[in-house]
Image 1 (spheres, rainbow, N blue to C red):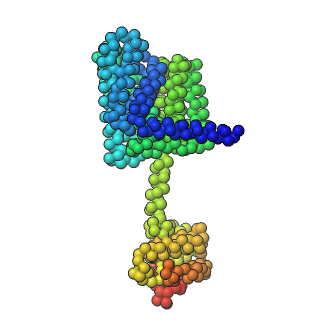
Image 2: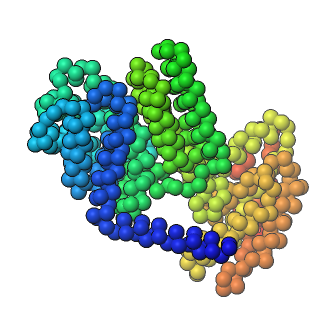
Image 3: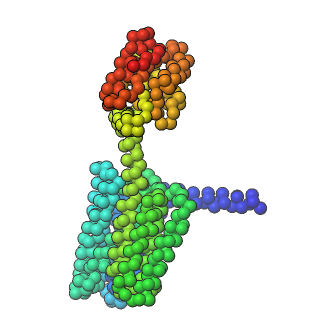
Length: 489
Protein backbone atom coordinates (compact mmCIF):
# COMPACT_ATOMS: atom_id res chain seq x y z
CA UNK A 1 0.00 0.00 0.00
CA UNK A 2 2.81 2.37 0.92
CA UNK A 3 4.69 1.40 -2.25
CA UNK A 4 1.64 2.31 -4.32
CA UNK A 5 1.30 5.70 -2.63
CA UNK A 6 4.99 6.41 -3.18
CA UNK A 7 4.72 5.43 -6.84
CA UNK A 8 1.69 7.70 -7.24
CA UNK A 9 3.56 10.61 -5.66
CA UNK A 10 6.57 10.04 -7.96
CA UNK A 11 4.28 9.95 -11.02
CA UNK A 12 2.55 13.15 -9.91
CA UNK A 13 5.90 14.86 -9.37
CA UNK A 14 7.08 13.68 -12.78
CA UNK A 15 3.96 15.12 -14.45
CA UNK A 16 4.50 18.47 -12.71
CA UNK A 17 8.15 18.54 -13.77
CA UNK A 18 7.24 17.74 -17.36
CA UNK A 19 4.56 20.43 -17.33
CA UNK A 20 6.97 23.00 -15.94
CA UNK A 21 9.64 21.99 -18.46
CA UNK A 22 7.12 22.37 -21.30
CA UNK A 23 6.08 25.78 -20.02
CA UNK A 24 9.68 26.97 -19.65
CA UNK A 25 10.52 25.94 -23.21
CA UNK A 26 7.32 26.90 -25.05
CA UNK A 27 6.87 30.56 -25.94
CA UNK A 28 3.29 29.87 -27.04
CA UNK A 29 2.36 28.23 -23.75
CA UNK A 30 3.86 31.12 -21.77
CA UNK A 31 1.99 33.65 -23.95
CA UNK A 32 -1.31 31.82 -23.41
CA UNK A 33 -0.68 31.59 -19.68
CA UNK A 34 0.12 35.31 -19.53
CA UNK A 35 -3.03 36.25 -21.46
CA UNK A 36 -5.20 34.05 -19.25
CA UNK A 37 -3.52 35.32 -16.06
CA UNK A 38 -3.90 38.98 -17.03
CA UNK A 39 -7.63 38.57 -17.72
CA UNK A 40 -8.05 36.57 -14.52
CA UNK A 41 -6.38 39.20 -12.32
CA UNK A 42 -8.36 41.92 -14.12
CA UNK A 43 -11.59 40.19 -13.10
CA UNK A 44 -10.29 39.91 -9.51
CA UNK A 45 -9.99 43.71 -9.48
CA UNK A 46 -13.29 44.28 -11.24
CA UNK A 47 -15.11 42.24 -8.58
CA UNK A 48 -14.32 44.89 -5.97
CA UNK A 49 -15.10 48.04 -7.97
CA UNK A 50 -16.81 50.71 -5.88
CA UNK A 51 -17.69 52.75 -8.97
CA UNK A 52 -17.25 52.39 -12.70
CA UNK A 53 -13.54 52.20 -13.59
CA UNK A 54 -12.44 52.53 -9.93
CA UNK A 55 -11.46 49.50 -7.85
CA UNK A 56 -10.04 49.03 -4.35
CA UNK A 57 -6.91 47.87 -6.12
CA UNK A 58 -5.93 47.02 -9.70
CA UNK A 59 -3.91 43.75 -9.82
CA UNK A 60 -3.25 43.90 -13.61
CA UNK A 61 -1.00 46.91 -13.01
CA UNK A 62 1.29 44.73 -10.89
CA UNK A 63 1.28 41.91 -13.43
CA UNK A 64 1.92 44.25 -16.37
CA UNK A 65 4.82 45.94 -14.56
CA UNK A 66 6.41 42.61 -13.62
CA UNK A 67 5.94 41.08 -17.08
CA UNK A 68 7.50 44.05 -18.86
CA UNK A 69 10.39 44.07 -16.41
CA UNK A 70 11.15 40.38 -17.00
CA UNK A 71 10.04 39.74 -20.60
CA UNK A 72 10.30 43.20 -22.13
CA UNK A 73 8.70 44.37 -25.37
CA UNK A 74 7.71 40.84 -26.48
CA UNK A 75 4.88 40.93 -23.93
CA UNK A 76 3.29 44.07 -25.42
CA UNK A 77 1.02 42.28 -27.97
CA UNK A 78 -0.26 39.92 -25.26
CA UNK A 79 -1.12 42.75 -22.86
CA UNK A 80 -2.70 44.69 -25.72
CA UNK A 81 -4.92 41.72 -26.66
CA UNK A 82 -5.94 41.32 -23.01
CA UNK A 83 -6.78 45.04 -22.80
CA UNK A 84 -9.03 44.78 -25.87
CA UNK A 85 -10.83 41.69 -24.55
CA UNK A 86 -11.57 43.21 -21.14
CA UNK A 87 -12.74 46.43 -22.82
CA UNK A 88 -15.23 44.44 -24.87
CA UNK A 89 -16.49 42.86 -21.66
CA UNK A 90 -16.64 46.24 -19.90
CA UNK A 91 -18.64 47.71 -22.78
CA UNK A 92 -21.23 44.97 -22.37
CA UNK A 93 -21.16 44.85 -18.56
CA UNK A 94 -21.52 48.63 -18.12
CA UNK A 95 -24.14 48.70 -20.92
CA UNK A 96 -22.26 51.50 -22.67
CA UNK A 97 -23.68 50.32 -26.00
CA UNK A 98 -20.68 51.06 -28.17
CA UNK A 99 -20.47 49.30 -31.50
CA UNK A 100 -17.97 46.40 -31.61
CA UNK A 101 -15.53 48.38 -33.74
CA UNK A 102 -15.78 51.35 -31.38
CA UNK A 103 -15.26 49.07 -28.38
CA UNK A 104 -12.18 47.56 -30.01
CA UNK A 105 -10.85 51.05 -30.72
CA UNK A 106 -11.49 51.91 -27.08
CA UNK A 107 -9.62 48.74 -26.08
CA UNK A 108 -6.64 49.76 -28.18
CA UNK A 109 -6.65 53.21 -26.59
CA UNK A 110 -6.87 51.67 -23.12
CA UNK A 111 -4.08 49.24 -24.02
CA UNK A 112 -1.78 52.01 -25.21
CA UNK A 113 -2.53 54.17 -22.16
CA UNK A 114 -1.91 51.21 -19.84
CA UNK A 115 1.16 49.82 -21.61
CA UNK A 116 3.19 52.98 -22.27
CA UNK A 117 3.80 54.14 -18.67
CA UNK A 118 4.34 50.66 -17.24
CA UNK A 119 6.68 49.57 -20.00
CA UNK A 120 8.74 52.76 -19.68
CA UNK A 121 8.77 52.49 -15.88
CA UNK A 122 9.77 48.83 -15.88
CA UNK A 123 12.64 49.45 -18.29
CA UNK A 124 13.83 52.42 -16.24
CA UNK A 125 13.86 50.27 -13.12
CA UNK A 126 15.61 47.46 -14.99
CA UNK A 127 18.27 49.89 -16.18
CA UNK A 128 18.77 51.32 -12.70
CA UNK A 129 19.05 47.97 -10.95
CA UNK A 130 21.28 46.31 -13.54
CA UNK A 131 23.40 49.13 -14.92
CA UNK A 132 23.82 51.11 -11.70
CA UNK A 133 23.86 47.97 -9.50
CA UNK A 134 21.95 49.65 -6.69
CA UNK A 135 22.00 48.35 -3.16
CA UNK A 136 18.84 46.62 -1.96
CA UNK A 137 17.53 49.70 -0.05
CA UNK A 138 18.08 51.94 -3.08
CA UNK A 139 16.45 49.34 -5.33
CA UNK A 140 13.39 49.35 -3.08
CA UNK A 141 13.25 53.17 -2.99
CA UNK A 142 13.54 53.28 -6.79
CA UNK A 143 10.83 50.64 -7.16
CA UNK A 144 8.40 52.51 -4.90
CA UNK A 145 9.00 55.93 -6.47
CA UNK A 146 8.76 54.59 -10.00
CA UNK A 147 5.58 52.68 -9.09
CA UNK A 148 3.97 55.85 -7.72
CA UNK A 149 4.88 58.00 -10.74
CA UNK A 150 4.06 55.34 -13.35
CA UNK A 151 0.65 54.60 -11.83
CA UNK A 152 -0.14 58.36 -11.73
CA UNK A 153 0.75 58.74 -15.42
CA UNK A 154 -1.24 55.60 -16.26
CA UNK A 155 -4.23 57.03 -14.38
CA UNK A 156 -4.12 60.25 -16.42
CA UNK A 157 -3.73 58.42 -19.75
CA UNK A 158 -6.30 55.70 -19.11
CA UNK A 159 -9.00 58.05 -17.82
CA UNK A 160 -8.55 60.33 -20.80
CA UNK A 161 -8.65 57.36 -23.16
CA UNK A 162 -11.96 56.28 -21.59
CA UNK A 163 -13.37 59.78 -22.08
CA UNK A 164 -12.10 59.90 -25.67
CA UNK A 165 -13.73 56.54 -26.47
CA UNK A 166 -17.04 57.62 -24.86
CA UNK A 167 -16.79 55.01 -22.13
CA UNK A 168 -16.66 57.67 -19.40
CA UNK A 169 -17.91 61.21 -18.87
CA UNK A 170 -15.36 64.00 -18.55
CA UNK A 171 -16.83 65.24 -15.26
CA UNK A 172 -16.27 61.80 -13.69
CA UNK A 173 -12.50 62.21 -13.83
CA UNK A 174 -12.32 64.51 -10.79
CA UNK A 175 -14.07 61.99 -8.54
CA UNK A 176 -12.26 58.97 -10.00
CA UNK A 177 -8.61 59.86 -10.53
CA UNK A 178 -7.39 59.60 -6.90
CA UNK A 179 -8.84 56.16 -6.03
CA UNK A 180 -7.90 55.01 -9.54
CA UNK A 181 -4.28 56.05 -8.94
CA UNK A 182 -4.04 54.58 -5.42
CA UNK A 183 -5.61 51.34 -6.66
CA UNK A 184 -3.09 51.02 -9.49
CA UNK A 185 -0.20 51.80 -7.15
CA UNK A 186 -1.41 49.18 -4.66
CA UNK A 187 -1.50 46.62 -7.47
CA UNK A 188 2.15 47.32 -8.31
CA UNK A 189 3.60 47.69 -4.82
CA UNK A 190 1.82 44.66 -3.34
CA UNK A 191 1.73 42.23 -6.25
CA UNK A 192 4.68 42.98 -8.55
CA UNK A 193 7.24 41.41 -6.15
CA UNK A 194 5.07 38.27 -5.94
CA UNK A 195 4.81 38.12 -9.72
CA UNK A 196 8.60 38.53 -9.95
CA UNK A 197 9.00 35.38 -7.86
CA UNK A 198 6.54 33.41 -10.00
CA UNK A 199 8.21 34.55 -13.22
CA UNK A 200 11.57 33.42 -11.94
CA UNK A 201 10.13 29.88 -12.19
CA UNK A 202 8.52 30.37 -15.61
CA UNK A 203 11.49 32.25 -17.08
CA UNK A 204 14.50 30.64 -15.30
CA UNK A 205 16.95 31.79 -17.96
CA UNK A 206 15.99 35.43 -17.63
CA UNK A 207 18.50 37.53 -15.72
CA UNK A 208 16.99 40.25 -13.62
CA UNK A 209 18.29 41.77 -10.42
CA UNK A 210 15.39 43.68 -8.89
CA UNK A 211 14.94 42.69 -5.26
CA UNK A 212 17.36 39.79 -5.63
CA UNK A 213 16.42 38.63 -2.13
CA UNK A 214 12.89 37.98 -3.40
CA UNK A 215 13.31 36.37 -6.80
CA UNK A 216 13.25 32.62 -6.61
CA UNK A 217 13.46 32.65 -2.84
CA UNK A 218 10.98 29.89 -2.08
CA UNK A 219 12.81 28.33 0.87
CA UNK A 220 10.93 27.15 3.91
CA UNK A 221 9.37 29.66 6.28
CA UNK A 222 9.95 29.55 10.01
CA UNK A 223 7.63 27.28 12.07
CA UNK A 224 6.02 30.43 13.52
CA UNK A 225 5.11 31.90 10.12
CA UNK A 226 1.55 30.54 10.09
CA UNK A 227 0.90 32.09 13.51
CA UNK A 228 2.22 35.45 12.36
CA UNK A 229 -0.04 35.27 9.31
CA UNK A 230 -2.99 34.33 11.52
CA UNK A 231 -2.30 37.37 13.71
CA UNK A 232 -2.42 39.58 10.60
CA UNK A 233 -5.65 37.98 9.41
CA UNK A 234 -7.27 38.27 12.85
CA UNK A 235 -6.28 41.93 13.10
CA UNK A 236 -7.77 42.68 9.67
CA UNK A 237 -11.06 40.95 10.51
CA UNK A 238 -11.37 42.67 13.91
CA UNK A 239 -10.48 46.13 12.54
CA UNK A 240 -12.89 45.90 9.63
CA UNK A 241 -15.73 44.46 11.72
CA UNK A 242 -15.20 47.38 14.08
CA UNK A 243 -15.64 49.78 11.18
CA UNK A 244 -18.72 47.86 10.01
CA UNK A 245 -20.52 47.98 13.36
CA UNK A 246 -19.55 51.53 14.34
CA UNK A 247 -19.85 53.00 10.83
CA UNK A 248 -17.23 55.50 11.96
CA UNK A 249 -14.45 56.87 9.80
CA UNK A 250 -12.25 57.02 12.92
CA UNK A 251 -12.63 53.29 13.58
CA UNK A 252 -11.67 52.46 9.99
CA UNK A 253 -8.17 53.75 10.71
CA UNK A 254 -7.62 50.77 13.03
CA UNK A 255 -6.54 48.89 9.91
CA UNK A 256 -3.20 50.71 10.06
CA UNK A 257 -2.26 48.53 13.06
CA UNK A 258 -1.64 45.92 10.36
CA UNK A 259 1.82 47.48 10.05
CA UNK A 260 2.87 45.77 13.29
CA UNK A 261 2.47 42.07 12.34
CA UNK A 262 3.80 42.74 8.85
CA UNK A 263 6.93 44.41 10.21
CA UNK A 264 7.30 41.36 12.46
CA UNK A 265 7.03 39.06 9.44
CA UNK A 266 9.34 41.21 7.30
CA UNK A 267 12.10 41.22 9.93
CA UNK A 268 11.92 37.50 10.77
CA UNK A 269 10.97 35.72 7.53
CA UNK A 270 12.64 35.58 4.15
CA UNK A 271 11.55 38.06 1.52
CA UNK A 272 9.31 35.69 -0.43
CA UNK A 273 7.11 34.90 2.56
CA UNK A 274 7.04 38.60 3.40
CA UNK A 275 5.55 39.50 0.02
CA UNK A 276 3.29 36.43 0.11
CA UNK A 277 1.81 37.59 3.42
CA UNK A 278 1.34 41.09 1.96
CA UNK A 279 -0.63 39.63 -0.92
CA UNK A 280 -2.79 37.52 1.41
CA UNK A 281 -3.51 40.45 3.74
CA UNK A 282 -4.27 42.86 0.90
CA UNK A 283 -6.56 40.35 -0.79
CA UNK A 284 -8.46 39.88 2.48
CA UNK A 285 -8.81 43.65 2.98
CA UNK A 286 -10.10 44.06 -0.57
CA UNK A 287 -12.56 41.18 -0.13
CA UNK A 288 -13.89 42.48 3.20
CA UNK A 289 -14.34 46.00 1.86
CA UNK A 290 -16.80 44.53 -0.61
CA UNK A 291 -18.30 41.83 1.66
CA UNK A 292 -18.88 44.17 4.62
CA UNK A 293 -20.02 47.05 2.39
CA UNK A 294 -17.33 49.44 3.60
CA UNK A 295 -17.06 51.33 0.33
CA UNK A 296 -17.51 54.68 2.09
CA UNK A 297 -14.16 54.03 3.82
CA UNK A 298 -12.48 52.64 0.70
CA UNK A 299 -9.82 55.35 0.48
CA UNK A 300 -8.68 54.55 4.03
CA UNK A 301 -8.20 50.90 3.09
CA UNK A 302 -6.47 51.78 -0.17
CA UNK A 303 -3.96 53.96 1.66
CA UNK A 304 -3.55 51.30 4.37
CA UNK A 305 -2.63 48.66 1.78
CA UNK A 306 0.01 50.96 0.28
CA UNK A 307 1.44 52.09 3.63
CA UNK A 308 1.69 48.55 5.03
CA UNK A 309 3.26 47.28 1.80
CA UNK A 310 5.77 50.14 1.67
CA UNK A 311 6.87 49.56 5.26
CA UNK A 312 7.19 45.83 4.70
CA UNK A 313 9.20 46.38 1.53
CA UNK A 314 11.68 48.56 3.40
CA UNK A 315 11.85 45.96 6.16
CA UNK A 316 13.06 43.44 3.56
CA UNK A 317 16.31 45.38 3.56
CA UNK A 318 16.85 44.95 7.32
CA UNK A 319 18.23 41.37 7.22
CA UNK A 320 20.28 42.24 4.13
CA UNK A 321 21.74 45.33 5.80
CA UNK A 322 22.47 43.35 8.96
CA UNK A 323 24.31 40.69 6.98
CA UNK A 324 26.18 43.37 5.01
CA UNK A 325 27.23 45.14 8.22
CA UNK A 326 28.38 41.82 9.64
CA UNK A 327 30.51 41.25 6.53
CA UNK A 328 31.98 44.75 6.78
CA UNK A 329 32.80 44.23 10.44
CA UNK A 330 34.40 40.91 9.61
CA UNK A 331 36.55 42.55 6.94
CA UNK A 332 37.57 45.41 9.24
CA UNK A 333 38.13 43.35 12.38
CA UNK A 334 39.69 40.21 10.86
CA UNK A 335 42.95 39.67 9.01
CA UNK A 336 41.96 38.04 5.75
CA UNK A 337 44.92 35.64 5.54
CA UNK A 338 45.24 34.34 9.10
CA UNK A 339 41.68 34.94 10.36
CA UNK A 340 43.14 36.56 13.47
CA UNK A 341 42.33 40.10 14.60
CA UNK A 342 43.34 42.83 12.13
CA UNK A 343 45.94 45.41 13.16
CA UNK A 344 43.30 48.12 13.65
CA UNK A 345 41.01 45.96 15.73
CA UNK A 346 43.93 44.50 17.67
CA UNK A 347 45.17 47.93 18.74
CA UNK A 348 41.64 49.08 19.56
CA UNK A 349 40.98 46.05 21.75
CA UNK A 350 44.43 46.17 23.35
CA UNK A 351 43.92 49.80 24.39
CA UNK A 352 40.50 48.91 25.82
CA UNK A 353 41.88 45.92 27.76
CA UNK A 354 44.81 48.00 29.01
CA UNK A 355 42.55 50.76 30.36
CA UNK A 356 40.24 48.21 31.96
CA UNK A 357 43.14 46.45 33.67
CA UNK A 358 44.54 49.75 35.00
CA UNK A 359 41.10 50.85 36.21
CA UNK A 360 40.42 47.52 37.92
CA UNK A 361 44.02 47.23 39.15
CA UNK A 362 44.43 43.87 37.41
CA UNK A 363 47.34 42.22 35.64
CA UNK A 364 47.83 42.24 31.90
CA UNK A 365 50.65 40.99 29.68
CA UNK A 366 51.53 41.48 26.06
CA UNK A 367 53.17 38.65 24.11
CA UNK A 368 54.74 39.40 20.73
CA UNK A 369 56.10 36.72 18.41
CA UNK A 370 57.22 36.23 14.83
CA UNK A 371 58.44 33.33 12.71
CA UNK A 372 62.16 32.68 12.70
CA UNK A 373 63.83 33.15 9.29
CA UNK A 374 60.51 33.97 7.65
CA UNK A 375 62.21 35.78 4.76
CA UNK A 376 64.21 32.63 4.03
CA UNK A 377 60.94 30.62 3.87
CA UNK A 378 59.52 33.05 1.31
CA UNK A 379 62.75 33.16 -0.71
CA UNK A 380 63.29 29.39 -0.72
CA UNK A 381 59.77 28.06 -0.95
CA UNK A 382 57.76 30.98 -2.33
CA UNK A 383 55.21 33.32 -0.81
CA UNK A 384 52.50 30.66 -0.93
CA UNK A 385 54.54 28.57 1.50
CA UNK A 386 55.02 31.63 3.70
CA UNK A 387 51.29 32.34 3.68
CA UNK A 388 50.56 28.72 4.52
CA UNK A 389 53.00 28.85 7.45
CA UNK A 390 51.27 31.97 8.79
CA UNK A 391 47.83 30.34 8.56
CA UNK A 392 48.90 27.06 10.16
CA UNK A 393 50.70 28.82 13.01
CA UNK A 394 47.79 31.17 13.65
CA UNK A 395 45.33 28.29 13.87
CA UNK A 396 47.62 26.42 16.25
CA UNK A 397 48.19 29.43 18.50
CA UNK A 398 44.44 30.17 18.69
CA UNK A 399 43.81 26.63 19.95
CA UNK A 400 46.33 27.10 22.76
CA UNK A 401 44.91 30.39 24.05
CA UNK A 402 42.04 31.08 26.43
CA UNK A 403 38.72 32.38 25.06
CA UNK A 404 39.35 35.88 26.46
CA UNK A 405 42.90 36.13 25.07
CA UNK A 406 43.25 38.11 21.85
CA UNK A 407 45.51 37.10 18.97
CA UNK A 408 46.09 39.59 16.16
CA UNK A 409 48.41 40.12 13.23
CA UNK A 410 50.38 43.32 13.76
CA UNK A 411 52.15 43.20 10.42
CA UNK A 412 54.03 40.77 8.16
CA UNK A 413 54.86 37.73 10.28
CA UNK A 414 54.65 39.62 13.60
CA UNK A 415 51.75 38.79 15.91
CA UNK A 416 50.55 40.11 19.24
CA UNK A 417 48.74 38.20 21.97
CA UNK A 418 46.91 40.27 24.57
CA UNK A 419 46.67 38.31 27.83
CA UNK A 420 44.13 39.95 30.19
CA UNK A 421 44.22 39.14 33.90
CA UNK A 422 47.65 37.52 33.45
CA UNK A 423 50.91 38.18 35.32
CA UNK A 424 54.37 37.75 33.86
CA UNK A 425 54.89 34.30 35.36
CA UNK A 426 51.70 32.96 33.77
CA UNK A 427 52.56 34.70 30.50
CA UNK A 428 55.89 32.85 30.46
CA UNK A 429 54.02 29.58 30.87
CA UNK A 430 51.83 30.49 27.89
CA UNK A 431 54.92 31.38 25.84
CA UNK A 432 56.67 28.11 26.69
CA UNK A 433 53.55 26.17 25.73
CA UNK A 434 53.55 27.91 22.35
CA UNK A 435 57.23 27.17 21.80
CA UNK A 436 56.85 23.50 22.67
CA UNK A 437 53.89 23.05 20.39
CA UNK A 438 55.31 24.92 17.41
CA UNK A 439 58.72 23.21 17.63
CA UNK A 440 57.00 20.01 16.49
CA UNK A 441 55.67 21.62 13.30
CA UNK A 442 57.29 21.44 9.86
CA UNK A 443 56.87 22.79 6.35
CA UNK A 444 55.96 20.39 3.53
CA UNK A 445 59.61 19.60 2.78
CA UNK A 446 60.30 18.75 6.42
CA UNK A 447 61.92 22.06 7.30
CA UNK A 448 61.10 22.85 10.94
CA UNK A 449 59.22 25.94 12.07
CA UNK A 450 60.05 27.98 15.12
CA UNK A 451 59.14 31.33 16.63
CA UNK A 452 60.76 33.91 18.87
CA UNK A 453 58.70 35.51 21.66
CA UNK A 454 58.90 38.73 23.62
CA UNK A 455 56.82 39.26 26.76
CA UNK A 456 56.18 42.26 28.97
CA UNK A 457 53.85 43.01 31.84
CA UNK A 458 51.71 46.13 32.08
CA UNK A 459 52.86 48.93 34.35
CA UNK A 460 50.65 51.53 36.00
CA UNK A 461 51.61 54.38 33.65
CA UNK A 462 51.62 52.35 30.42
CA UNK A 463 49.77 53.16 27.27
CA UNK A 464 49.64 50.78 24.31
CA UNK A 465 52.65 52.35 22.62
CA UNK A 466 54.95 51.98 25.65
CA UNK A 467 53.68 48.46 26.38
CA UNK A 468 54.22 47.31 22.81
CA UNK A 469 57.63 48.97 22.64
CA UNK A 470 58.88 46.89 25.61
CA UNK A 471 57.40 43.66 24.24
CA UNK A 472 58.90 44.32 20.80
CA UNK A 473 62.24 45.07 22.41
CA UNK A 474 62.02 41.75 24.26
CA UNK A 475 61.30 39.99 20.95
CA UNK A 476 64.41 41.60 19.47
CA UNK A 477 66.47 40.31 22.39
CA UNK A 478 65.07 36.80 21.88
CA UNK A 479 66.25 36.91 18.27
CA UNK A 480 69.69 38.14 19.34
CA UNK A 481 69.85 35.25 21.76
CA UNK A 482 69.59 32.68 18.98
CA UNK A 483 65.85 32.61 18.19
CA UNK A 484 63.36 29.88 19.14
CA UNK A 485 63.24 31.24 22.66
CA UNK A 486 61.48 33.70 24.98
CA UNK A 487 62.76 36.95 26.41
CA UNK A 488 60.85 38.98 28.97
CA UNK A 489 61.25 42.66 29.65
